[in-house]
Length: 192
Ligand code: GRF
Image (cartoon, rainbow, N blue to C red; front, side, top):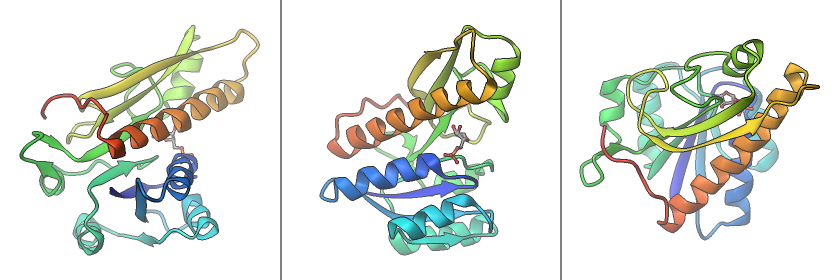
């Protein structure tokens, strides 16, 4: 199975996926990582791990670059742009009736969609934080949910502790979803 990753920032989730594919080359290849931010940390991670990366300015360019490698799936990993319905149509699977695009979100959706979810949950003194992995539609963090997990917020937690616990859960969950998808054992939600 071949995937492409879209990322806009630090790239720790992208790195977790790249590590998994490096260790499981027969199962999955991260063929390309694309970013819409020229100075995104994810680029250095790709260089360090020997994974092809590139920049795109708009969806037309994005599509052209993806067409060169024809990924089976696109994984969004800290990708800070909403993909248009027109773009997503290119990744619509007629048999599965879903877009072959997956996102990870740092909250128990539908709670805290959008930006700064860990921060907002922390300020609200939630008892637990969460992570959601979902199929992408053209709304904001609104596609059908694949898996959700919560993690505790400890009384002694600083925001940084809380975020670190969440991110480490993200890395585990995203890798597991990638593995199951590649093995054909992932239960996918129905249609958008
Ligand atoms: C993660 O919390 C992810 O869920 C969210 O943005 C953050 C990206 O972190 N969408 P990283 O770039 O993968 O380190």
